[in-house]
View: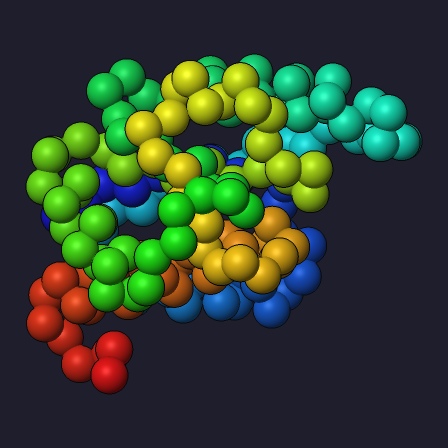
Length: 156
């Protein structure tokens, strides 16, 4: 069984996102143990503060990274994979027996200092999504990957 941690900044405020997450976590439960770590976003007033805010958020994230985990940053410029390639990737890195940690930033993105703690950088799409939408999309893609790995009839 996969062990997955999703570290995210901010909480869902919309009921629709909460319901979608609940559904995908339920679907994932036979395949993976999922832990969601929601960290508070840092408030900011202008883009002049953006780097300082991202640095503060990065410090919070680093404190939540378990030792010996495989850390994957979700970033716009990360590696793009098809759903099948992502499933193969999850199967390969999940086979190492280490916890898989996916890190989602706030609306500002992730601070560059996190790269020194990461094993991989992943992009979900060349499109830009809100971090809440990206979180649900990640959960859906993890579920899709698990069904592909386990030869279930979800991905056609």
